[in-house]
Picture (spheres, rainbow, N blue to C red):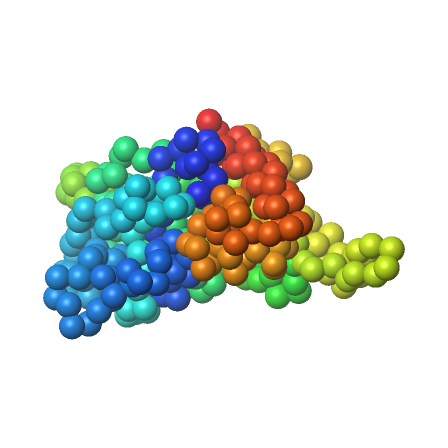
Length: 326
């Protein structure tokens, strides 16, 4: 959420974040703990809305996606972004989407509408420069449906072997569900005919050409904590080996999805510095790391860490905007 906030505050972009992770880490980072009950109190039937409310009809068997007012505006948080908060019940929606993927293969109209929920959200929120979806580390059906109608996707990478191993899984997974979806569209047209299918697709904003969506725009790398010695910090060989392997592996696994016009050397958007000493301050104050100050508890050399972090985010923002194509 840090670079997303940077886009809003320092690049004056109007940003909507959709927290599609059942763990809702982005929501917890943005919203102060004292406000959580306003959204999640089970005894409050008038609680503020979350992403689950958008999907509620689908859980009950309907194909409708509920476009309601955005629950959190940019003026209601220090990150200066609009937010649709996450919810643990998204795991239930994942089951619903899984069933829909199967039913789509037989030409089920309701199922294909459910999978294209994101287009409904996009149509109702055209005032934003970016709608950014934060998904959990899952190759599940809900994430598939989110990627289906996302213009672009990027991969934040940690400096560890598990991130490296996961890259090939992502590429294979995307290719499999794309083939599945293309087969489903062909089945639908065969079942209902071209004219009826076209009217249905237009009415419900169904994606019929996935070659125009889900384009890869790059990756960032979370730095690790280097070992400290009397004469300064030293890199750790195991971490450096993993980091040096990222680019080739990403090109191999995700190269076929790269957006047209992006060169190989442009895929790395930037690094995210390891600033363990100020992360707790950001979490406690519900404030972006790059906006931390003396008032939020920054002391001593933490000031330089904040400024250094801001420089890294500026690079990320520049490369992100460039690769998106503005």
